[in-house]
Image 1 (cartoon, rainbow, N blue to C red):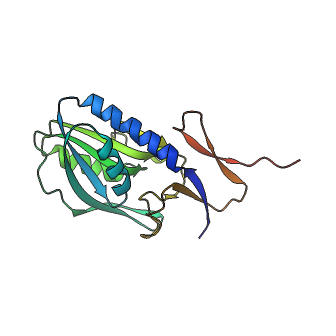
Image 2: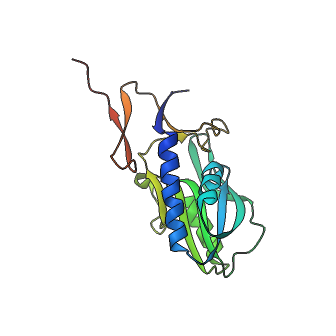
Image 3: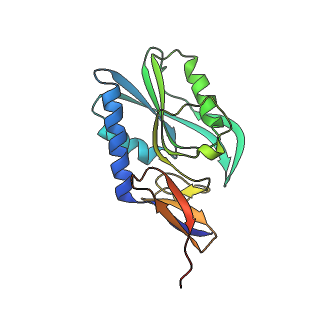
Length: 196
């Protein structure tokens, strides 16, 4: 396997997830919310996020498969359905990462057919450079990241590395390092300067 470079550390993850939970709590003040976890990748993010939300909540779980290894099959397949319909409910779909948007476009159309009261999307990671579907609006974004394959904190490579407690970027360039902006929101890969 290629070298792993830490993209987002534990403290940065914790801080940002707390901020997202506070924003969701504020946006839905006095309302009941159904949080929908897209398994398996969103599990850790979902657990940390929903425990910090101060609202009356319901939890639902679904599973959609689109990846084999590092490549998308481009054909979403629902493998686990929610237990209850979302008709008339406030729904927040929680995703680990959005890149092409194909999976979320498919899921949001399915859920909208049930006529929820509201439907919002929350993702830990967003790769806007990879977006192919224009109408996938993300309401809550943890981090915008470069167009690179990432693992850890629920994200996998052929079912490995999910339990790592940080988000890592796979790179085969030994001169790359990670650079965070001052708000730890947008991250990018940069080449290390040459030593003089």
